[in-house]
Amino acid sequence: MTRTRCEAFSDRSPIRVLGRRALLPALAAASALLSLGGCETTYAPRQTLDLRPRVLEVVDHHGGTRRVTLVRDDVWYQSFGPEIEVVDARDGLRISTVEVAPWGEIAPISDMVIAGDELVAVHARDRVVRYALDNPRRPRFLAEIDAATLGIEPLFLSVENDRVWVSGDGGTTPLDVRGLVELSNVPSEASVGRVVATNEGLVAPVGRRILALDDGRYLGAASDLRPIEGPVAELVDPEGGFVFQFGSDEATTVGILGPDLRERDRRAFPTTIHIARVLGDRLWAVMPTEIVTWPIEAGGVLGPPLFVPVKGARDIAMIRDNYYAVAGTFGRAIYRFKADGTGDADEFVAVERSPGRLEMAVTDGRRVLAGGVEGNWLYRIGGTIELSDRPLRSSTQQVGAITLAWCEAAIEEDGRSVRIDPVGGDPFQWSPPHGGTVHTLEAAGDHVWVGHDFGVAAFGLRDGGVVSAGEIVVEGPVVWLFRPRVGDEVCFVSVFGGIGTAEIVPDPDADPGLVRMVRPEEAEKAEREMREAAGLPPAPTAD
Image (cartoon, rainbow, N blue to C red):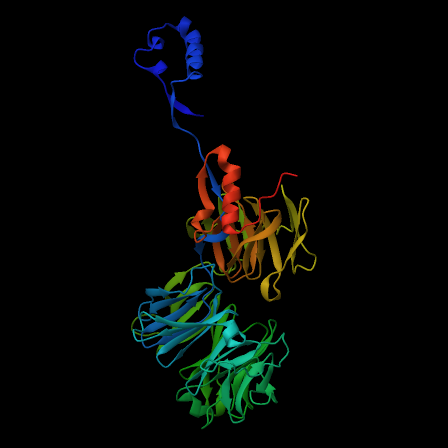
């Protein structure tokens, strides 16, 4: 509607003195006057042409898995998804947080080590990041090395003779030497584990075999190896020894090896062992529902075990004698092993809870209740989250097929890809990275949303074809996607990556020339000019 300023509506206009009966004829007369000359146009409506590409953005996030725990002096370094929490080990309070990119833009941390005066972190299959510890309480970014430069997809870190080794899919490589990749000829389905020095030279587990780095010869069986450090190493052997793990998701063996990789003692459990470390003079094994610890006796023999019930632990590190940092899907805490002047034995203090293992989820369109054996959490979509006493006895089924105005989308039978069939267009196929699985679909804002092993992807129609609207990287699997009652956001729930809200927005880093305010009659011409200037294809025609 065009607004005008006209003398017909001045203070002297007859319309101000006419009665109700004359109002309609007066309005008709005024309308006739507007059709005549003498009216000055002061405002006309404009519309926004926004040709910027759309991107997927995390607008809110809570939780995730704390996988790797390191302590030096009184500082506790704790991985939390893609970031590092720096915690005061004396009281469990967070000092600072370190991240190289926001949640959703970078892969979670899969391993960390302290080497000299540096903290080194590996983001799973993506990159390695180095931090200086000149101020241990505020690590300072030094450099990052991506997977292409490393020559492998990194997963694990180890330190031998002051050299950091990076291992993963495709082999293992020293961080300070470019182009040298050892064990690069192993089967593609087997990742190379941490490098350790033995009487046979440098070795690393590959799958469940121990192989020599120099020639790949077979030297024993283990799926993980860690050197035993400190005074207890001499108790095992004058030349030291190793903690080993061997097994699968169903059963795992943990024990002690000598420097010659010969077994000294072992224990087997019908479950997963997430990690095994020697701390002080004891071996600690972290399992899904408990932590088991044994004293190490002469010759590497394991003494009687003690069991610490705790659900959701993933790693443990010694803070000082009798006190340990424990973290995982439950959150993080300080564990007091034996009774002392400050409290009872077998007690967790300075506990910080967060949603890290979400095995079920339901929604009412405004809130999501998600959780499992480690507790339930009530999340207001796009807002706050809190522990909840509400029971969660069932879960929402995953969505395998959806229909939008412009397409049909469905997960293929093998779960390895999603197929999108646009109306009148060519079919589009997409698969998650690293051979991952697609778990669920959702429709919001004229986009297809896909939850998979490594995060969330979204796709839309642009210039007549299916295009990506971006991806979110979180530790998966993302098993549920929920569209709220109002808005085009989507709530994502990951089993190990937490819960949050994402939205598709115009790319804020795109060329500003792709946005323009124009009059309706100029829109077609303006869009054509904008597309030509930006090198975009012409707009599709109606037919």
